[in-house]
Image 1 (tube, one colour):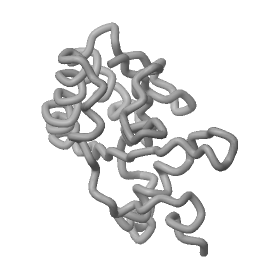
Image 2 (cartoon, one colour):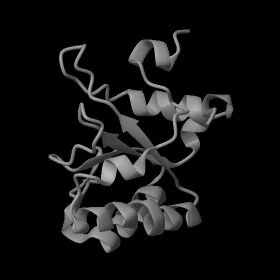
Image 3 (cartoon, helix red, strand yellow):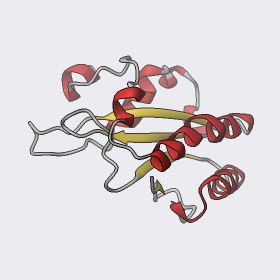
Image 4 (cartoon, helix red, strand yellow):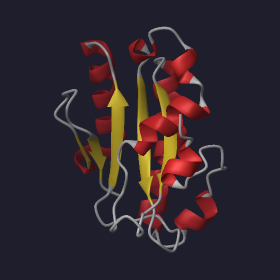
Length: 152
């Protein structure tokens, strides 16, 4: 199997550089991201929903794309999720941090949050927590097919 580092040119074990990513953000955007990273993550974990953050670099060499399946691969490799029997029964969300070519957070389109939320209870819990924390800046129709979206 090809490693993520070889295929995507990404190291899934590299520590997340929040200081670098906060540079282009205004105070409200920083507050939103901090709220997501701390209070919202804590509430998710209290409800047995795991939250992962994955940096997604912009790949200029491949024609200027973001590899949207990369976050799942990173989470599976970083946390050895594939070793867990029936890991798709574990509720989790992946906050995708799209980076610009300069390594800053790309905030033009907000944050997308990919998810694996089996059962209606997990979906309702996530919607309730996110709506309470972010109001109309959060959007999701509650379906398995759609990503969660958060305006910074």
